[in-house]
Image (cartoon, helix red, strand yellow):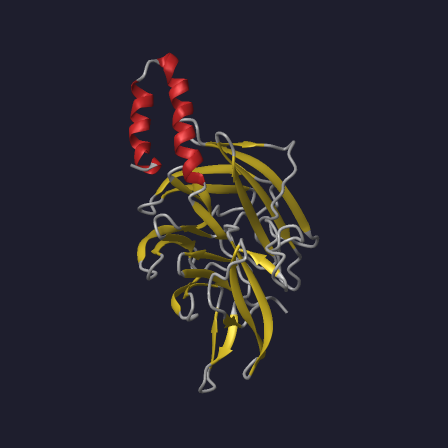
Length: 333
């Protein structure tokens, strides 16, 4: 029996114990339910969580809805009824940013990892000029990064907005003239019967994720070239430019385990780097929007995309377009 299957029985035990013992039982429950499970899924990128032990991928699709897909063939196991940007695991649930719908506040969703049902919604206050939107908005963006704490999650948020030149600003809270850059920290408490948020104004927000490029101390010393870490930090990518008859050049990918042993045969991609993680003989990678041409000379385009690639052959097993939070629609003249 794994830790996840023990969660319901732990909750029952904590309820039937005497009041004096309930606090100790709750602490044991928290240690069991949060600590092992929080590290089961790897954040490939904002909106994409890879859970190797259950061979499942959780992602936010191009239209903003959340999905769980089988790692082997990409089959959809569930699809949420509302939009959300997946952030992290939260015990036996998933944590997502919901669509707040107005300036000055945000919405967190706790989602059942096995059905996609939204189990709880937690609103939190933001400065009145901040739009915590899930979907891409012109010239503004809200980002959030989560890290586990002893009793829940700490969320570092940042917001940036630039003037939308040429548009008549009539909507409430619209950016009129000046660039806005704001950030903050809130704690999401999960150890109580009802989840709640606690602002932490005394803390400095750190919404930056670790650089994918390995430092001089981290890199594999026996291998030449720039080296990039996998999302779970267990493998290393070395990419080198090579001539390509269509694009002029492309990039040869070589993957290594951290001990320097080659993990796969090399293959080529039209980009030097992408968020990636290796799960047994399948490479999951997130590719940027790309315009490409096939052997017949026909052009095609795909947006931000998650692909499962077979090692050795470089063949794509399945793929799906992801939520791209960089606005690419029309702007005013």
